[in-house]
Image: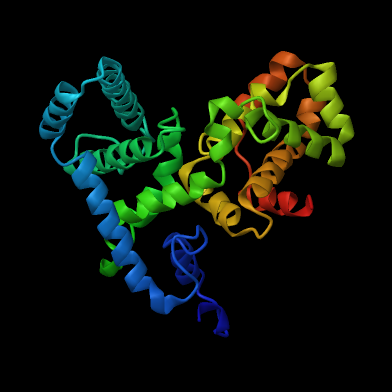
Length: 307
């Protein structure tokens, strides 16, 4: 075991986490990994065969099915669904092309970048097809990107099937934040508004003065800035290396990912409290929508203290 060694190799430990151990993708018993990985990768191949293998043949099959349907309402529903998924694919395509434009890994004219873009699109479209209650929500590409990057960069040839691993870990990760993406739950206690309310309560608990100044005095409510923080898991607030660092904590904290994310968001507010207390609506909103560079280790230290 990696943790039983006298000196812990953090790179090896991070690789275990990257392979999905902390996301629930792999069982704790390492002897079961090979069998589980083979099963998942076979399942992913089946998904690809069903939904992505040949769009022309799939379209013709759906047309044939629609033609033989006796109920015209079913035909209309089928055509509407096809139209909706066509729009989703177009949205995915636009978003993927905008993913981390500063990184040659994701953007550019190289065959490597284009291959990675195509893989991202496939993973996101399969998720949309298999999760009808959520489908695709703009910004999911940003959540997939760190997972895909880690798997794609894995030097271990035995773990080179990064597409399947990225897909299932993406599914596992979003399962913990699923309610934030479900529009029907937006105004419920478990939806995004409920999550934003929890952040407000957490800030009030640890820094009542700051919470009052932000939300009462300057009327800067969490939905104005923290909606993006929470739904995109902070991927838009920090550089890519810092995101990986933050996610190491996010995925490993025993308190759960949602609670850990809220503590990190609260710590972000506390770290800039002096500027916020001195600011008005305009300056505070600008600050929080363009969060300044910060020491990530210190940020996580502060977040850890908010228990």
